[in-house]
Length: 68
Image (cartoon, rainbow, N blue to C red; front, side):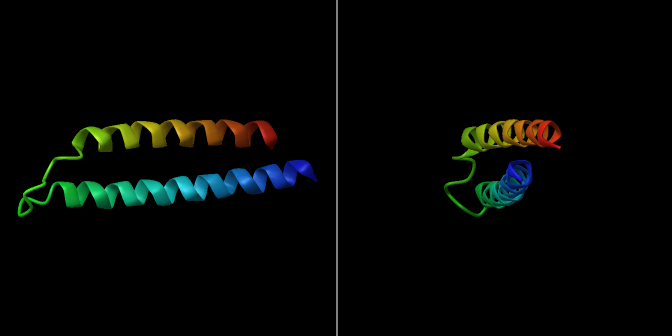
């Protein structure tokens, strides 16, 4: 029973991580908008977001493999 709940929570984390990745993609597109004076002001943070999302996806996948 606990394994099922763990798996459900891990799948929720996987879904949420995907949603965050989609938001970062939108933020990136906005940051690259050539018509805006604030273009490229988030470039370093966007790189960090992507690195951390990748780490979160990997640890979630490893966790799922352990629980299954």
